[in-house]
Amino acid sequence: MPTQRWFMVVMLSCLLIPSVSCAADVSLLEKQITSLKEQVILLQRSLLSQNILKATTTHGGSALVPAVLMDDVRIGSSGSSVAIVQLVLAQQSSSIYPEKVVSGYYGMLTAQAVKRFERVQGLPETGVISGDTKKKFNEAIQQAKIFMSGPNYYCTTTNIQGLSFKGHRSYVPLCAGLVPSSGFDTQGLMQVATGSPAFFYVDVYDVGSVGAKIALGVDRPVKVIAYYAPTTERLSDISLSVESHVFQKIHTLNMSSLRKGVSYNVYVLVTDVSGNMATSSVKSFKTIADIDTSPPRILDVRARDVATSSVTISWRTSEVSQKKLYIAPLRGFSIGTAKTYQSQVYTTSHAFSIYGLSPETEYIFVIESEDVKGNRSQSDRWSFKTLDNDLLSPIFLSVVAVPRAEGVAEVKVVTNEPTAVAIHYGNSDPLDIGTAFYQQSATKSTTHAFSLAGLQQKSVYRLVLSAVDRVGNRATSTQYSVTAY
Image (cartoon, rainbow, N blue to C red; front, side, top):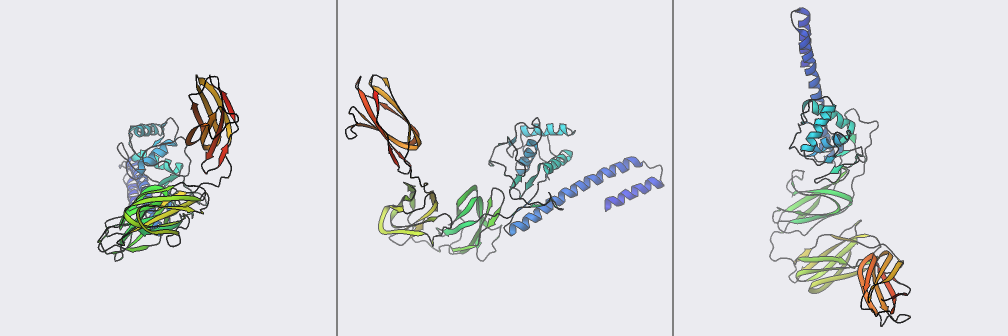
C-alpha cells in the first residue's frame, strides 16, 4: 500500500537522520492512515449496497444493508439521510432530541439536537454532520440497527417509542423477515427472508390510441410501479413508467404517451411496507391505430344496498348502450372466469341486483358498455365487501321516557348494535300501531333521542319502538308509558 511505503520512509529517516523531527510526522501519518481506512470502509459499504441491490432487484428480490451517511448533512437538507439522522437522535437520551420528530427535513430542531449530540460526544458544536460528527453518527447507526434498501426505503430492527412522524411517511417500518445467523455476515449484509407479495390478477384494459390502463390486485397493501415499452424495444427499468406510492391492495394505473397502432409489453413491480418485492409476468397489448368514434363513458358507478349475500350495482353512460357486468371475489379475480350479467337493452341508466354472494367477502366488479355503433368501453376495477352473516335481532338495552315541558316528552333509546329506530306513540292501551303517531331516526347508531311534542296535558301516552340493524334484522320493544305535564 502507498501509505505503508511512506510510513517506512519516514521511519528510516528517523533512524538514519537523528536531526529529523519524527514524532510529529509519525503522528500525522497515523492520523492520515486511520482516516483513509475509515473512508475505504464507507466506500466499500456503499459499493456493496449498490451492487447487491442491483443484483437482487433484477431477480425480483430485495436486500437490506446497514445504512451509512456518505454526504454531509446540514440545515436545509432533506430526504432519507436526514430521516436516518433523526432516527438516531430519537434513540439517544431524551434530553438530546425530546421532540423525536422524523420528518426527513433538517431544520432548527434537528440542528439543535445534533449540537447536543456533539456536546455529549466531546465534539465541537457545529450542528453540521460532517467529519468527526459524521463518523460518530455512522457508529450510532450501526448500534441503532438502521438499514436501507435503495435510496427511498429504510427500516429499523428496534421499535422506537414516542416518535412524531411528519411529511409523506406515516411510520418507520420494522425490518420484518430478517434472518441473520449471528448479526452481520462478513460483508455486513442481512438478507430478507421469503415472503414476497402475491398477485391475484394483473389486467390491461381500456386500450386506446395513445393510452391504456393496467389494474392489479395483491394479497397485501403495496406501492407499485409499472414499466412499459414497445415490443421492439428492451423492457427495463429505464422504460416508460407510471407509479403509485399509496400502499393498498388494489391499484389502477394510467399508461400514457403511447403510439398509435403499436404493440407494447408491460410488467409491474410491487413493494410492501416491509420492503418485500414481487414482479409480475409480462403482459402484451396493442394500441388502436385510429379511432373513428368514441366509446360510451361509464359514469357514477355505485355499489349500494350491500348486504350479507347481495348488492345492487348501478351506473349511467354518456350515450345509450348495452350493459355487461363481470363480478368475482378479489382472490383469483379474472375477467375470463368472473360471473357475467348482461342486457342488450340500449339505455343510459343501468343497474344489476346480484344475489348469492358469500358473506364478509371482498368482491371486484368490472362494467362493460357498448354503444349502437359497436364502440365498447370498460370501467376501472371497483370493489366492495359483503356484510358478515348476522342472524341476530338487535336488543333494546335501555328505553327512558320522561316529560320535559308542557306537552313535551323526551325518549332516549340505547341498542346493542347500530340500528335505525322508529317510535310509535298514542293514548290507547294497548297501543294501536295503526292509529299511533310515528317518528323515525334513520341513521344507524346505538343511541337515539326523540322529542315528542304536542302531547295532551296530564295524559298518559304508550310507546312502542322498533329497530332494524344493518343487515335487516328487526326487533320490537315492549310497551312503555309516559305522562305529559
